[in-house]
Image (cartoon, rainbow, N blue to C red; front, side, top):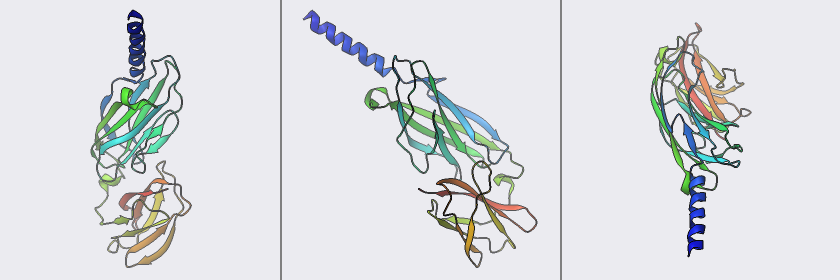
Length: 238
């Protein structure tokens, strides 16, 4: 009888040790007040996950819920890559984390100078042990947009962009009363992306980007004087 109790005690101790492997700092819920002065800057919130065990582990996570103003991008970065959560909520798996090492689970809100509040919940657990080690990481921000040439200061042109996400091309409409307009597309690093205007009819443009990688891009409409009159985000699917 004593031997059986001892074995059960060891098993319980092993379970508790494993269940403590998801440890976060400064905690599992973090709020940041952020002022954005650059249209292409992201609002980053860092929650660190520490492997307090004795063995290498990998972590699995996925987006559970989020709320953000229209036009914001939502992504998360681990110790290997950044993932657009609006294209694919997951699950994703990290690289191995050594005992005592820390992984930065960095949430990136891309507000493109659209002020407002946003939050997201990401569930993370030791790979293969979601029942015992799952923790919900909660990220939130109140963002003030202060971009001299960003979306917050342009005129309210009734530009529509659809579909989003798109596969190889999308349509832009609502600019028929804006005079001579040129359209440019940028990636999230601010680099100009090659695109082709396939058709133009009564203020509507079909824009083709067949060679562009999947992801989120920024579309800008500029008038004849060089002033940006409208801007929008557009997402290309896999």
